[in-house]
Length: 161
Image (tube, rainbow, N blue to C red):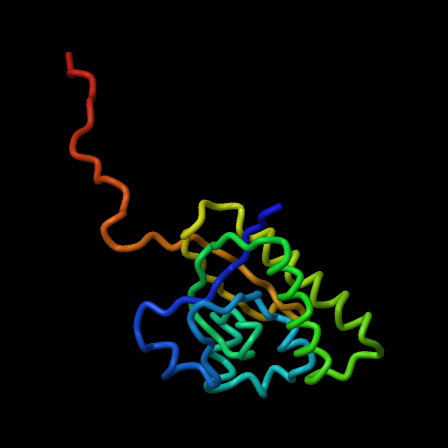
């Protein structure tokens, strides 16, 4: 079975200036809201604010990227991504067990896969905000320049009597 997952991309060098750390092109990504679950709202400032507001999390680097591209991922590579993310979660968050880290990683990657119900190479962006104590995420498809919908050139209207 082949699934789809978000893959980090960089269209220019902007991400390297606004994120610390910056994700690497080609690595698998997840939305990564869990990274902000225990951060006080007043601590979300500067580059952390940029990552919070618009960043996808690269699972290899634990760096951030603004855009991801929908990509096919073979099942074996998906499972390797689960293992890698579980290791990252284990190192950074001290979960109660390896099984708990793996369950969290699988849940996050399954969620990311659910965002990829678009054709391969579709670009996705996100915006994230706090609403009270909740993190709210919105995802959108980004249309590359030159692929904008055609403009309406004329309109047919009834003649006036």
